[in-house]
Image 1 (cartoon, rainbow, N blue to C red):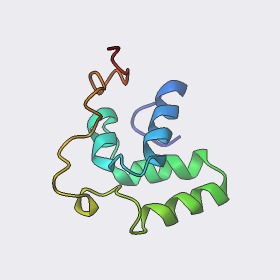
Image 2: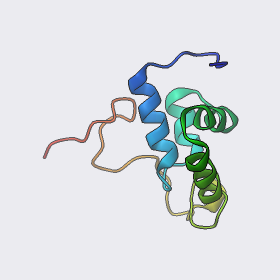
Image 3: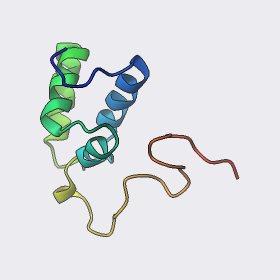
Image 4: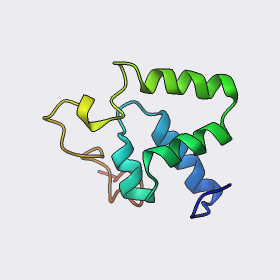
Length: 95
């Protein structure tokens, strides 16, 4: 990998999961992992099958995805669910 930071397998899995989620913006990945959008794209390209990567890119660039904050509803001002603990832990709090 040609990244400035080496990620653990768990971190890689989480970044890929966040990138797959339509409602998780690239800014959330940047905030949590200090990984800008261009690096996320490189990471996805190197870790997904070609067909999966193409499908992901097509979806991200479509109107369905909210991966870019400009496409999101301006009323949404958070990166995480209100029931989620600190974003760095990614643990759902128990009620």
